[in-house]
Image (cartoon, rainbow, N blue to C red; front, side, top):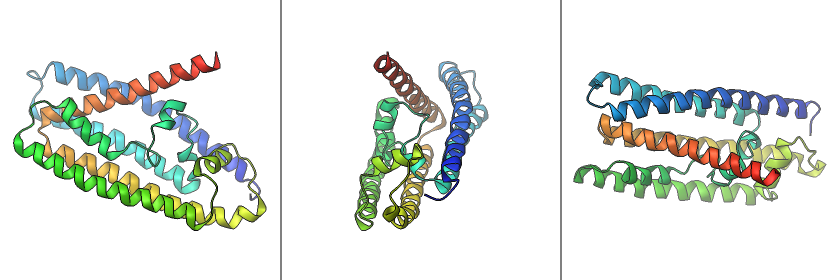
Length: 233
């Protein structure tokens, strides 16, 4: 490991943790707005609903942009984020939510889909499954090509700034670059899938969908933090 890389890793991880804390505060605020819009849909004007949807999507985009900056500096940090609970980490698919799961959430949160909407979502699910398999295969190929140890093991070592054996240094650099591309591809699939869902749904349906997604994120986090606290206690 090059001199100073441990300090750099610490700064990168700490910077993202700080961003994430502020992002969570805004996340809870947007959930309140979404719930209000959902409960008072008659009082909300069409433009107000569209503006809220745009703000929520921008909020998620900010997360991906910050995560991308961290990944470009040290991709291992996004595979073992210190700001997430053990449960949240266990639920990750290539450092984030699985796009197919987000699509299944549509059917459980939006009960008034038209036949055309349902068919479009189902087609999108099939297309997304193919893309997910491609990324899964690419991730497996990356590890095999550099004879890397288990990815999570390396991620934890890097996140904790542990030294890597000298013979691994070149393989580590190759692995980093390849993983950056896989993570970027997975994040792109996440965002494009979400945007396609938003295009298919009506504004009022999007409010229900985004409310469910936002609540699910916070529920998983709260449950994970509680489990970690109980384990330590």
